[in-house]
Length: 214
Image (cartoon, rainbow, N blue to C red):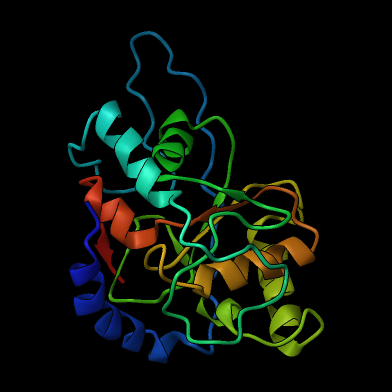
C-alpha cells in the first residue's frame, strides 16, 4: 500500500531532483509492437525495456493497487493547467484523456500490440525502463506558450507525426500534478490517446516492478 508517510518522506527529495532536467526534453523512440513469435525461434526483446520484469503481485493485488490509483481525493477534474504546488491531491479523471493504472500499463507493455511513448515528467534519479524525459511539459502557463510549442515539436518527433499513438505520462504518485499538466498539454496538441499514469513511480514500485537509474 502506498502510505502517506512514505510519500511525505520522499517527495521533497524526488521533486528537488528534477531541477537539472527542467529545461530539456529527451529524444524518445516509441516502444514498438513485436511480431508474433514463430515456432522454434526465441521471442525478440521489447524495444526500450532492457531489464526483465521483476516478479510482481498477482491480479488480485493489482486490482487492489488499481483501486488506490483511482481513488477520489475530492479534487474535481480541470482542463486548465495547474499553477499551484506540484505536490498535492490530484483529480481522479482528466478531461480529454484516460487514467491508466499499473495493471493497464503492464498489459500495454507485455501485450506489445501497439507502439506507444512512455514519458517521465518527474525527472528523478530513477525512472521506469523505456521512459523518455519530458519534465518541462509540467509547467503552468497557457496552451499557446513556448513550452507548448517545444512540447509539440518533441511529441511530433517522438510519435513520428502520429496523433493517434498512445502517450503514457507519469510523475511521482496520485499526489503529483506534473504529469497531469503534461497530459493536458498533449491533449490540447491534438493527441487522441493520452493515458495519464496517475499512480506514477510509487505505484510502479509498489507493484514490485524494476526501475533504472537515469
